[in-house]
Amino acid sequence: MNMQEAAERADSILDATFGAIRPEVRWTHGETTTGSCDLSRRRAVMTVISEQRRGGFLGVVERFWRKSGYEITSVNTNREFPAIYARSPDGFGLRLSIAGKGQAFFEVATPCVEESDVAGPTTPANGPDYRGGPIPRPDVHDSFWSSLGGLSAGVGGTA
Image (cartoon, rainbow, N blue to C red):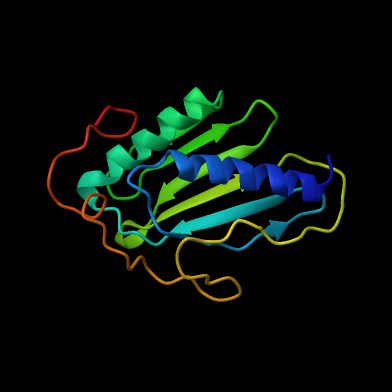
């Protein structure tokens, strides 16, 4: 596998993960970074994830990753800034972290592969495309994910 093929695999992991999140969230591409034999693809969620919904949001992703055969390698249960880390059977590292203002960030890091040129992601963002510039704080309010109502079951729980 070369770096372009690995980037396409990382994109497919992200596409499938976002496809499992219901209701859908708005997102934009983050920066792609390359190392000597690996790379990382990133996406930032532009939908505000309220503190009350963060555990449920992480739970949806965690359950999808487990169902997809990914090993959950670590969970940060911090109430304000929780995160989940996983690894695919083919060595890709996955991360979902919640940052300031309830903004979720996804990253898929590839294993070491054959060096090659890497094109940008081909999946269009379903929100504004901020590639090449700073990504602002989340600014999309959703009646479910941004709501203050209802308690979530926490990271790894059922909502």
